[in-house]
Every structure is written in C-alpha cells, then in structure tokens.
Length: 343
Image (cartoon, rainbow, N blue to C red; front, side, top):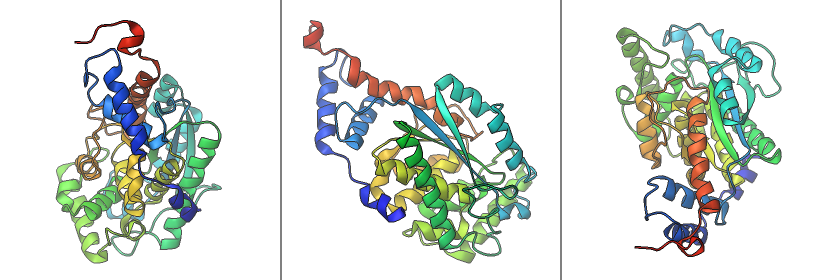
C-alpha cells in the first residue's frame, strides 16, 4: 500500500499553476490584493492538475491517537489514561474539536492507532516503547502506521472528501514531535521543545534533556523518514504522515493542524518530497518547533492565534480560509465579463 501511494505522488502541474496565476490577474480585484490566498489557490490548482481546482468541500478531519512510552520519563504532568478518555469525549461530540467541526461542516473520524488501552481495528501496538531507552517502534510498525493513515485518507476520499484535515490525540506526544523536528531540521532540542499542555520551567528543562539524550543515543537518519519515526516518533505521528501521503497520492490537499502534524509532515516529505505540495499549514502553533518545522517545509500558516490544543482545532479554523481561496477562482468575475474597467 505504501509503495502504491508513493508511485502516485507527483509534482505540481505547472500548466495548471500558470493558468491559475493568469486567471488571478483577470479577476475583478487589484493584482495581489488577496495576499497569501492567491499563491495558495494557484498551488492547489497545480496539485489537482486543473484550473480552477475542486472546491474544498466536503471536508473530513481524522484524529489519530496513540500513547507514548516516553511518558514514563515524566515529560508531562497529565496521566496517560487521558488519551483514551479524550477519545470517548470525541466520540460523544463533547470536545473543542467537535464544536469547531460542527461550525466548519467537517466530518470527524477518530482512529486509535496506538492507545495503550482498549481494542481497535487500526491499533498497531498499545503505545510506543520508551525512546529514551530503546527505539520507539520497529520499521515494520512504522510502515503499518503509515499504511493506516494512507487507508484512512483513501476511505475519506472515496467517501467524497475533497480536503483532508489532520487531528491528533496522545498524552506526551509533543515530546516525540520535538524529537522528530530536531532530527529532520538539525536544530537542537532546546530550540524545538515547548511546554506542550503547559509545563513549568523545571519540567521543560527535563523534557529537553530527555529529547537531546535520545537523539544522541539513536542518531536517526534525516534522509530516511521511516528510520526517524522508528527511533523517536509516535504511532499517531506515523499515521498522520501516511495520511498526508495518502492525500498527496489522490491530489487532495491536507490542512495541517499544529506541531504534531508539522512533525509528521517532515516525515512524509522525507519519504516523498513532492508530498509537500499537498500540505496547507493551517495555523502557527505556540510550540516553537512548529514554526521551525513549517519554515523547513517552506509553508506559511494561514492562522496565528497562539493555539496549542491540538485535536485538529487549528486546521478547522483555517478550513474556510483555504476554501475561500479556491472559491475565488470559481466564482469571481473577470474585468471583461463584469464590464469593470481596469487601471
């Protein structure tokens, strides 16, 4: 499944990009007046291989969930059982992400790819190993998680989704996210490690030291996305990377949420560089690693509100912005058709 998806990921269609850029100049607005929305719409035309690209509806959010062996190292004050409890909350529709999804008109799919408790058809294993002591995952487990993400993307696309949104849940998952970002970007642990759900200075110093020691111990290879995921990643990170690859293989845009999605996108792009063309940065997480990861990917976030919740909330807030960028190419009249004089 992984190889099949990778074979379908292609570069942007330069003809469709040029057509979109030309059309932007003909619409009843000053050139460049929509700022970042104009190059975004052109890039999505290139992704789809047609101008205008498909409207970004229906929208589908997938929340990938997993637990982490690194939790045992005291990198968060939250108990691990909160991961499973929040999955129940998502299912009942009571989380912030559910409220935002209802507002945005997006479906929500919850995927237990690695929660420590309970049963799930998609579970690869009940949480990762403690990567301060040993690699978090085997290569086979990473590939299984990648293929879960690819399968969920295919399922949602086959169900009619024209834009995919990333979501995540996993207590302690900002620790592997920071480790992934450091490994892929070459930045030190102290530059990419943040406070996650809100830790004090002492715990932040400890978390940073745990990440730095693990990177030194395992020496992950940034040219091998699977290797980095196996050594210091999480199951939800790997599944999101697969979800991105799955969207890219279908030429469907994927709106990234926060730092977990950004770290997963680094892995996806290490595996298939052209997958970056499918990625839309939904928002700038308050986690410092998110900004570093997005800069490394060459992506500029659409929303900057200081969010650090995760779940997919930032991606949902960005959805109408990205959708509006595409709708402009569909519905705005040209100067000629509207009888409006140009300058």
